[in-house]
Amino acid sequence: MEIIRPGLLTSVQDLGRYGWQKYGIIVSGAMDSFALRIANLLVGNNEGTPGLEITLMGPSLYFHQDSLISICGADLSPTLNQEPIPQWRPLYIKRGTTLSFGSCRSGCRAYLAIAGGLSVPQVLGSSSTYLRAKIGGFAGRALQKGDLLHCHPPSEKVQKKISSYLTKNKNFLSTNWFVSRKILPQYSSKPVLRVLEGSQFHSFPLESRKNFFSNPFLVTAQSDRMGYRLKGIPLQLSKSLEMISTAVGGGTIQVPPDGHPIVLLSDRQTSGGYPNLAQIISVDLPIIAQTKPGEKVTFQKTSLAEAENLYIVREKGIRQLKQIIDMQ
Image (cartoon, rainbow, N blue to C red; front, side, top):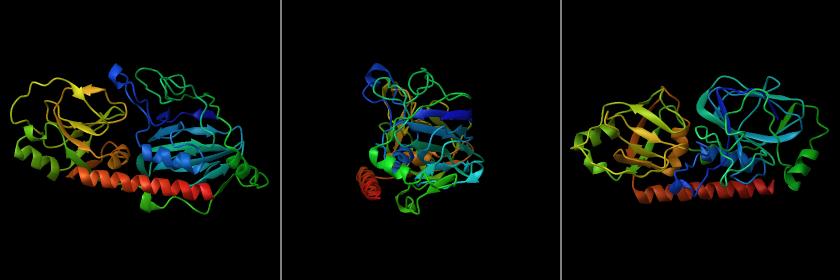
Protein backbone atom coordinates (compact mmCIF):
# COMPACT_ATOMS: atom_id res chain seq x y z
CA MET A 1 0.00 0.00 0.00
CA GLU A 2 1.52 3.31 -1.12
CA ILE A 3 0.77 6.73 0.35
CA ILE A 4 -0.19 9.05 -2.50
CA ARG A 5 -1.44 11.83 -0.22
CA PRO A 6 -0.96 11.61 3.56
CA GLY A 7 -3.95 13.64 4.75
CA LEU A 8 -3.96 15.85 7.83
CA LEU A 9 -2.73 13.23 10.31
CA THR A 10 -2.58 9.55 9.43
CA SER A 11 -0.67 7.21 11.72
CA VAL A 12 -0.34 3.53 12.58
CA GLN A 13 -2.11 2.65 15.83
CA ASP A 14 -3.07 -0.47 17.74
CA LEU A 15 -4.67 -0.71 21.21
CA GLY A 16 -1.74 0.83 23.04
CA ARG A 17 1.55 0.31 24.83
CA TYR A 18 0.67 -1.01 28.29
CA GLY A 19 2.92 -1.90 31.21
CA TRP A 20 5.38 0.97 30.89
CA GLN A 21 3.66 3.96 32.49
CA LYS A 22 5.67 3.51 35.71
CA TYR A 23 8.73 4.38 33.61
CA GLY A 24 7.06 7.48 32.18
CA ILE A 25 6.21 5.87 28.81
CA ILE A 26 2.70 6.72 27.67
CA VAL A 27 0.07 4.29 26.35
CA SER A 28 -0.79 5.88 22.96
CA GLY A 29 -3.00 3.64 20.79
CA ALA A 30 -6.21 4.34 18.89
CA MET A 31 -8.27 7.26 20.15
CA ASP A 32 -11.46 5.35 19.29
CA SER A 33 -10.44 1.84 20.30
CA PHE A 34 -13.94 0.52 19.63
CA ALA A 35 -13.79 1.47 15.94
CA LEU A 36 -10.34 -0.09 15.49
CA ARG A 37 -11.40 -3.31 17.24
CA ILE A 38 -14.47 -3.70 15.03
CA ALA A 39 -12.55 -2.83 11.85
CA ASN A 40 -10.06 -5.60 12.64
CA LEU A 41 -12.74 -8.18 13.44
CA LEU A 42 -14.47 -7.47 10.11
CA VAL A 43 -11.37 -8.55 8.15
CA GLY A 44 -10.47 -11.55 10.31
CA ASN A 45 -7.71 -9.92 12.37
CA ASN A 46 -7.17 -9.96 16.10
CA GLU A 47 -8.78 -6.91 17.69
CA GLY A 48 -5.45 -5.27 18.52
CA THR A 49 -3.83 -5.63 15.09
CA PRO A 50 -2.27 -2.33 13.94
CA GLY A 51 -4.27 -0.30 11.44
CA LEU A 52 -4.43 3.31 10.28
CA GLU A 53 -5.95 6.12 12.32
CA ILE A 54 -7.13 8.82 9.92
CA THR A 55 -7.95 12.27 11.29
CA LEU A 56 -10.43 14.75 9.73
CA MET A 57 -8.81 15.02 6.28
CA GLY A 58 -7.96 11.58 4.98
CA PRO A 59 -5.19 10.27 2.73
CA SER A 60 -5.11 8.70 -0.72
CA LEU A 61 -3.76 5.15 -0.69
CA TYR A 62 -2.78 3.05 -3.72
CA PHE A 63 -3.10 -0.72 -3.29
CA HIS A 64 -0.46 -2.84 -5.02
CA GLN A 65 -2.25 -6.12 -4.20
CA ASP A 66 -5.74 -7.49 -3.72
CA SER A 67 -6.87 -6.76 -0.19
CA LEU A 68 -9.74 -7.21 2.21
CA ILE A 69 -10.30 -4.01 4.17
CA SER A 70 -12.80 -2.33 6.44
CA ILE A 71 -13.30 1.28 7.47
CA CYS A 72 -14.97 2.15 10.78
CA GLY A 73 -15.42 5.25 12.88
CA ALA A 74 -15.89 8.70 11.36
CA ASP A 75 -17.48 9.18 7.94
CA LEU A 76 -14.77 10.87 5.89
CA SER A 77 -16.45 10.16 2.53
CA PRO A 78 -14.28 7.20 1.45
CA THR A 79 -14.11 6.28 -2.25
CA LEU A 80 -12.39 3.66 -4.38
CA ASN A 81 -11.36 5.04 -7.76
CA GLN A 82 -13.81 7.89 -7.02
CA GLU A 83 -16.70 5.48 -6.35
CA PRO A 84 -18.31 5.87 -2.88
CA ILE A 85 -17.91 2.85 -0.62
CA PRO A 86 -19.73 1.79 2.56
CA GLN A 87 -18.29 1.56 6.07
CA TRP A 88 -18.64 -0.86 8.99
CA ARG A 89 -18.42 -3.92 6.71
CA PRO A 90 -15.74 -5.95 4.91
CA LEU A 91 -14.71 -4.74 1.45
CA TYR A 92 -12.66 -6.66 -1.10
CA ILE A 93 -10.61 -4.36 -3.34
CA LYS A 94 -8.50 -5.26 -6.34
CA ARG A 95 -4.88 -4.32 -6.91
CA GLY A 96 -4.39 -1.08 -8.80
CA THR A 97 -7.21 0.76 -7.02
CA THR A 98 -6.89 3.99 -5.05
CA LEU A 99 -8.66 4.52 -1.75
CA SER A 100 -9.32 8.19 -1.05
CA PHE A 101 -11.17 10.23 1.54
CA GLY A 102 -13.11 13.44 1.03
CA SER A 103 -15.12 15.74 3.24
CA CYS A 104 -15.75 14.99 6.90
CA ARG A 105 -19.46 14.22 7.21
CA SER A 106 -19.48 13.07 10.79
CA GLY A 107 -17.02 12.19 13.52
CA CYS A 108 -13.33 12.97 13.65
CA ARG A 109 -11.30 9.78 13.18
CA ALA A 110 -11.70 6.85 10.79
CA TYR A 111 -9.89 3.52 11.13
CA LEU A 112 -8.67 1.39 8.26
CA ALA A 113 -7.94 -2.28 8.90
CA ILE A 114 -6.40 -4.61 6.31
CA ALA A 115 -6.62 -8.40 6.47
CA GLY A 116 -3.35 -9.70 7.88
CA GLY A 117 -2.49 -6.37 9.47
CA LEU A 118 0.20 -3.81 8.78
CA SER A 119 3.76 -5.13 9.00
CA VAL A 120 5.49 -2.61 11.26
CA PRO A 121 7.94 -3.31 14.09
CA GLN A 122 6.84 -3.31 17.70
CA VAL A 123 8.41 -1.02 20.27
CA LEU A 124 7.91 -2.13 23.87
CA GLY A 125 5.20 -4.54 22.83
CA SER A 126 3.13 -2.19 20.66
CA SER A 127 3.08 -0.85 17.11
CA SER A 128 1.31 2.37 18.12
CA THR A 129 2.88 5.60 16.94
CA TYR A 130 3.90 7.98 19.72
CA LEU A 131 4.52 11.11 17.69
CA ARG A 132 6.29 13.23 20.32
CA ALA A 133 8.83 10.51 21.17
CA LYS A 134 9.08 9.39 17.52
CA ILE A 135 8.65 5.69 18.34
CA GLY A 136 6.41 2.95 16.98
CA GLY A 137 4.33 2.87 13.84
CA PHE A 138 6.05 3.78 10.58
CA ALA A 139 9.42 5.33 11.50
CA GLY A 140 7.84 6.87 14.60
CA ARG A 141 5.97 9.52 12.63
CA ALA A 142 2.80 10.36 10.75
CA LEU A 143 2.64 8.93 7.24
CA GLN A 144 4.07 10.96 4.37
CA LYS A 145 3.75 10.96 0.59
CA GLY A 146 5.68 8.08 -0.93
CA ASP A 147 5.67 5.82 2.14
CA LEU A 148 5.17 2.16 1.27
CA LEU A 149 3.43 0.02 3.89
CA HIS A 150 3.59 -3.76 3.78
CA CYS A 151 1.01 -6.14 5.21
CA HIS A 152 1.22 -9.58 6.74
CA PRO A 153 -0.56 -12.30 4.73
CA PRO A 154 -4.15 -12.81 5.86
CA SER A 155 -5.34 -15.97 7.55
CA GLU A 156 -6.08 -19.05 5.42
CA LYS A 157 -9.82 -18.51 5.92
CA VAL A 158 -9.60 -14.92 4.69
CA GLN A 159 -7.37 -15.94 1.76
CA LYS A 160 -10.09 -18.35 0.60
CA LYS A 161 -12.64 -15.52 0.74
CA ILE A 162 -10.38 -13.27 -1.33
CA SER A 163 -9.75 -16.06 -3.88
CA SER A 164 -13.49 -16.44 -4.43
CA TYR A 165 -13.65 -12.78 -5.52
CA LEU A 166 -10.83 -12.81 -8.05
CA THR A 167 -13.01 -13.38 -11.13
CA LYS A 168 -15.14 -10.31 -10.43
CA ASN A 169 -14.58 -7.17 -12.48
CA LYS A 170 -15.76 -4.45 -10.06
CA ASN A 171 -13.36 -2.17 -8.23
CA PHE A 172 -14.67 -3.57 -4.97
CA LEU A 173 -17.11 -6.03 -3.48
CA SER A 174 -18.82 -5.66 -0.14
CA THR A 175 -20.90 -7.97 1.99
CA ASN A 176 -24.67 -7.52 2.19
CA TRP A 177 -24.36 -7.46 5.98
CA PHE A 178 -22.80 -4.80 8.19
CA VAL A 179 -22.39 -3.87 11.84
CA SER A 180 -25.72 -2.99 13.45
CA ARG A 181 -26.11 0.53 14.82
CA LYS A 182 -27.36 -1.04 18.04
CA ILE A 183 -23.83 -2.02 19.00
CA LEU A 184 -22.22 1.31 18.07
CA PRO A 185 -21.38 3.99 20.67
CA GLN A 186 -23.79 6.92 20.80
CA TYR A 187 -21.74 9.03 18.38
CA SER A 188 -23.04 12.59 18.19
CA SER A 189 -21.95 16.13 17.30
CA LYS A 190 -23.40 17.21 20.68
CA PRO A 191 -22.56 14.24 22.90
CA VAL A 192 -23.57 13.71 26.51
CA LEU A 193 -20.62 12.06 28.25
CA ARG A 194 -21.19 10.01 31.38
CA VAL A 195 -18.68 10.50 34.17
CA LEU A 196 -17.76 9.30 37.64
CA GLU A 197 -16.68 11.62 40.42
CA GLY A 198 -12.93 12.28 40.46
CA SER A 199 -10.71 12.18 43.51
CA GLN A 200 -10.96 16.00 43.98
CA PHE A 201 -14.62 16.30 42.96
CA HIS A 202 -15.71 17.56 46.37
CA SER A 203 -12.88 20.10 46.47
CA PHE A 204 -14.94 22.15 44.01
CA PRO A 205 -17.79 24.23 45.45
CA LEU A 206 -21.40 23.25 44.76
CA GLU A 207 -21.79 26.04 42.20
CA SER A 208 -18.86 24.77 40.11
CA ARG A 209 -20.14 21.21 40.28
CA LYS A 210 -23.58 22.35 39.12
CA ASN A 211 -22.04 24.34 36.28
CA PHE A 212 -20.03 21.30 35.21
CA PHE A 213 -23.16 19.20 34.77
CA SER A 214 -25.61 21.83 33.55
CA ASN A 215 -23.63 23.76 30.92
CA PRO A 216 -22.00 22.67 27.66
CA PHE A 217 -18.25 22.95 27.06
CA LEU A 218 -16.67 23.83 23.74
CA VAL A 219 -13.90 21.59 22.37
CA THR A 220 -11.22 24.13 21.47
CA ALA A 221 -8.72 24.11 18.63
CA GLN A 222 -5.97 23.50 21.22
CA SER A 223 -6.99 19.83 21.36
CA ASP A 224 -5.01 16.83 20.19
CA ARG A 225 -4.33 13.17 20.94
CA MET A 226 -2.85 14.11 24.31
CA GLY A 227 -5.98 15.85 25.53
CA TYR A 228 -9.01 17.94 24.67
CA ARG A 229 -9.03 21.46 26.09
CA LEU A 230 -12.56 22.59 26.87
CA LYS A 231 -13.96 26.09 27.30
CA GLY A 232 -17.03 27.06 29.28
CA ILE A 233 -17.94 28.62 32.59
CA PRO A 234 -14.67 28.46 34.58
CA LEU A 235 -14.65 25.91 37.41
CA GLN A 236 -12.96 27.10 40.58
CA LEU A 237 -11.81 25.23 43.66
CA SER A 238 -13.22 26.02 47.10
CA LYS A 239 -9.66 26.73 48.21
CA SER A 240 -6.17 26.32 46.83
CA LEU A 241 -4.80 22.78 46.92
CA GLU A 242 -1.20 21.70 47.36
CA MET A 243 -1.12 18.51 45.33
CA ILE A 244 1.49 15.97 44.35
CA SER A 245 1.26 14.37 40.94
CA THR A 246 -0.95 11.30 40.79
CA ALA A 247 -1.68 8.66 38.16
CA VAL A 248 -4.13 9.56 35.39
CA GLY A 249 -5.97 7.51 32.80
CA GLY A 250 -7.82 7.92 29.55
CA GLY A 251 -10.84 10.12 30.19
CA THR A 252 -9.49 11.79 33.35
CA ILE A 253 -10.82 15.35 33.52
CA GLN A 254 -8.38 17.74 35.16
CA VAL A 255 -8.98 21.40 35.94
CA PRO A 256 -5.97 23.75 35.70
CA PRO A 257 -5.87 27.15 37.45
CA ASP A 258 -7.75 28.91 34.61
CA GLY A 259 -10.82 26.78 35.41
CA HIS A 260 -11.21 25.28 31.91
CA PRO A 261 -11.21 21.45 32.00
CA ILE A 262 -8.79 19.22 30.10
CA VAL A 263 -9.87 15.71 29.09
CA LEU A 264 -6.83 13.42 28.95
CA LEU A 265 -6.81 10.98 26.02
CA SER A 266 -4.58 8.42 24.29
CA ASP A 267 -1.28 10.34 24.31
CA ARG A 268 -1.82 11.58 27.88
CA GLN A 269 1.04 11.94 30.31
CA THR A 270 1.46 9.20 32.90
CA SER A 271 0.72 11.45 35.89
CA GLY A 272 -0.84 14.83 36.51
CA GLY A 273 -0.82 17.50 39.20
CA TYR A 274 -4.08 19.32 38.48
CA PRO A 275 -7.24 18.51 40.48
CA ASN A 276 -9.09 15.48 39.11
CA LEU A 277 -12.72 16.58 38.79
CA ALA A 278 -14.23 13.57 37.01
CA GLN A 279 -13.57 10.46 34.93
CA ILE A 280 -15.34 9.68 31.65
CA ILE A 281 -16.52 6.07 31.70
CA SER A 282 -14.78 3.71 29.31
CA VAL A 283 -17.76 3.10 26.98
CA ASP A 284 -17.98 6.84 26.27
CA LEU A 285 -14.30 7.34 25.42
CA PRO A 286 -14.93 6.53 21.72
CA ILE A 287 -17.59 9.26 21.72
CA ILE A 288 -15.25 12.02 22.92
CA ALA A 289 -12.60 10.70 20.48
CA GLN A 290 -14.99 11.37 17.59
CA THR A 291 -15.82 14.92 18.73
CA LYS A 292 -14.30 17.68 16.60
CA PRO A 293 -12.92 21.07 17.70
CA GLY A 294 -15.78 23.55 17.59
CA GLU A 295 -18.35 21.05 18.84
CA LYS A 296 -19.79 21.07 22.34
CA VAL A 297 -20.00 18.35 24.98
CA THR A 298 -22.01 18.06 28.17
CA PHE A 299 -21.44 15.81 31.15
CA GLN A 300 -23.80 13.57 33.07
CA LYS A 301 -23.05 11.93 36.39
CA THR A 302 -23.39 8.15 36.63
CA SER A 303 -22.53 5.43 39.12
CA LEU A 304 -19.69 2.93 39.13
CA ALA A 305 -22.24 0.09 38.99
CA GLU A 306 -23.85 1.57 35.88
CA ALA A 307 -20.44 2.15 34.25
CA GLU A 308 -19.48 -1.47 34.88
CA ASN A 309 -22.80 -2.74 33.52
CA LEU A 310 -22.47 -0.65 30.34
CA TYR A 311 -18.94 -2.00 29.85
CA ILE A 312 -20.12 -5.60 30.24
CA VAL A 313 -22.97 -5.06 27.77
CA ARG A 314 -20.58 -3.56 25.20
CA GLU A 315 -18.05 -6.37 25.54
CA LYS A 316 -20.80 -8.98 25.19
CA GLY A 317 -21.95 -7.24 22.03
CA ILE A 318 -18.44 -7.29 20.57
CA ARG A 319 -18.03 -10.96 21.46
CA GLN A 320 -21.34 -11.83 19.79
CA LEU A 321 -20.34 -9.86 16.69
CA LYS A 322 -17.05 -11.76 16.54
CA GLN A 323 -18.91 -15.08 16.70
CA ILE A 324 -21.23 -14.03 13.89
CA ILE A 325 -18.33 -12.87 11.71
CA ASP A 326 -16.48 -16.16 12.27
CA MET A 327 -19.56 -17.98 10.94
CA GLN A 328 -19.63 -16.08 7.66
